[in-house]
Image 1 (cartoon, one colour):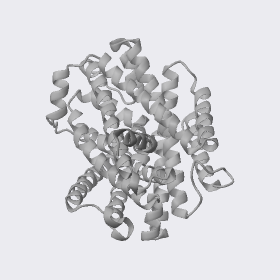
Image 2 (cartoon, helix red, strand yellow):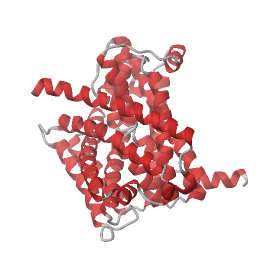
Image 3 (cartoon, one colour):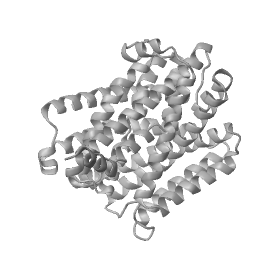
Image 4 (cartoon, one colour):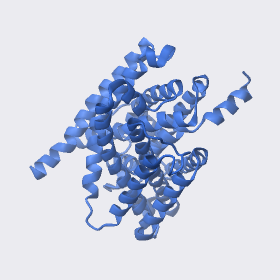
Length: 414
């Protein structure tokens, strides 16, 4: 096969892997990386290397299942493990993803306000735009919009260079692990992994590959799409940490939200760095608000055997469109209600995602090693060693992450 033909095939396949990985850098993810850089400088950069490896391993398996079976992950779980367990998982995932959607609309509102726009205007407008995009657009059209929007993430790379970091120290921290034995450092280390590898990603990636109609003959191109997406997403994460570590950490500026990071950059790195950071946050928040409800609609409809897909009309796939619409409308309304329990919903979302991630990964490993489903595309022995090791580490860290989230709440309310 000629090089040009391979490039053309890749360009036709490209999309699901790049979009899924990049949009995992949503408002909550950007907040995690911003806080990590502001509070510990470059010390947490090294965590991105094992995180990227784990992300590539997991996403590759999910993409392979989508290409070989032509089915979504919820479909396979329902067919092989029954409706009851699938239904329970879908309900918990719905609650978790609703909290994540709220977090993304909160990020959109905050970014709009620091750019000088009223959230009471921009939140309904943003919700309406993304609702029309998915409900009225085709899969190909939506994918092109999302791919273009992914380019805006490179604003974080520009802001990283504009902050003028000490590159020797940056590279040293990226490859030589530093560990500080205090709870905040450990918590942020785990949060970086937890915000990079989430349950919804696995469902969305496999569903989008199935809807796009990628076949096993095209799998190599799809795998490259996944590798590129996973690499890009953690390059962006790297530069977010670098920006905040270079500008905020030396001044001892403590932040709790990504929007605070953007505001703090203004006097330290200039108007351009502030603007780029704020616009990139707005882009990430809005993309997250599109994809997380879309992923939820996909896996619930797959689990229940309902029609689904962006290519479908409201009359062809009413449940799919109503689930998507419900999440967009209610999440955006919550942001506009004074005193709404936003923090509680975001914490609940993190806890539920953390609890479910090990179960989802075990389902994935079980399915990808089933020869009746995958034929000759099951994992090799060496790949299984790597993936089970990855799942083991992620499970242990996830349990620790959930415990560290719940203990302060118990001390406060118990």
